[in-house]
Amino acid sequence: MSEHPEQPPFRFPVATRYAGMASSPLKDIFALAARTDVVSFAGGIPDPELFALEDVRDCYDWVLSHQGRRALQYGVSEGEAELREQAALRVARHLPTSAEQIRITSGSQEALFVIAEALLEPGDVVLVESPTYLAAVQAFAVHGARVIGVDTDDGGVLPDALDRAIRTHHPKLVYLIPTFQNPTGRTMDLDRRRAVAAVLERTATVLVEDDPYGDLRFSGEPCPPIASLGAMSAQTLLLHSMSKLMSPGVRIGWIRGEGAVLGTLAVAKAAISMQSSVVDQLTVARYLASKDLDAHVARVCGVYRERRDAMATAIAPVLPAGAHVTRPEGGMFLWASLGHGIDAQAMLAHAVAAGVAYLPGWSFYAEDPDRSTMRLSYVTHAPAVIADAVGRLGEVIATHAERADGVSARV
Ligand code: PMP
Image (cartoon, rainbow, N blue to C red; front, side):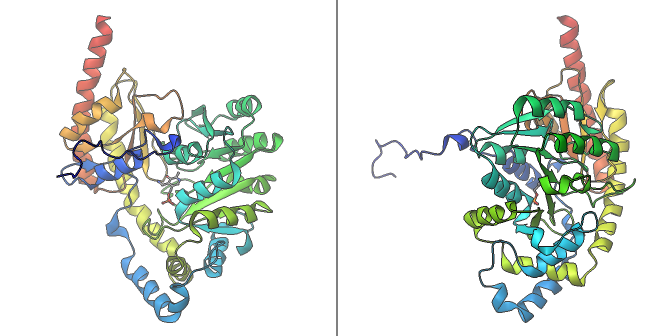
């Protein structure tokens, strides 16, 4: 019993930019993914059975045995030298890069926050693909940016639309995920990348190129980052993450940049979190130096390829006529536009009741959402589980399509 029953509960005065965000879409995804009675395609959650647990244990043991006192101490905001060296070696596969050009972050999510903190003033415009990664939109929006979506097709952002949007809105930066995009799984080919780079160079616009999925390629030829085309490297911040390749739990990613902005990024990083966990940084550095990440990623890709195939095969026949679904060459997601006036958010409760969850697509749009869209992650479940759950989802979709068509026939 409260001592003052007549007193209303204390209301914390939260910042306006967070008001109405009592639950973030990402928190909701993780809640759905945790339910054992539902096959969830909602989160981009790596299959934990595929983690290289023994190798990672080995590396933590080695770090604590050989570098223990340093690993448990504060570090530097730029990141630990060994990890920056290893990160630079990976980036240099596509783009000449030295350790000095790397800033370590606690995953790409923090990288987005560090960049927003370092670059954005309230009222600045950020251009994004429509649709795009919802947590990036949130990171820019809570720093006061006006986030505007640019039209895309199956080949990514449309260069002409980007050019027009830059001339109209004079953005502070453009945020793109050119490879196996979240949420669509789409990849920009080399011609599209060149066209986009030309627009960005001509208009001297900053690019934030987010690439957490690029190494998860199952088929087709790798594409160079936009950062490596023409003179783009000087005006691009290129983001990588260990989350989808090694482990999201270690929370390690990095930003590759050039010039004076690197100093500002280190100051912003220090303001946010001093530095990323030193023990985790040293362990990831040890892992990259002493284990074979490429071989691990190749194993993971083999498994994900089968799951992508299982989902692509199962979903094609259950979609209503005129619906569209992507078939990515890598990454984690399929993106379906159901059409027929279906509201994927309203349909979700019925899908969950049928034991299957997906992520309604509306939240990935900065504006004007297509509410008939859904994102389906294929990476977490075995092919047989996927086939069975997609079958059940198909029945729910069919019911909603019939209902929606019935309504439109009556009006
Ligand atoms: N960017 C994109 C496009 C993502 O999909 C994600 C994770 N889903 C992130 C950044 C953040 O990932 P992390 O912080 O785990 O590196």
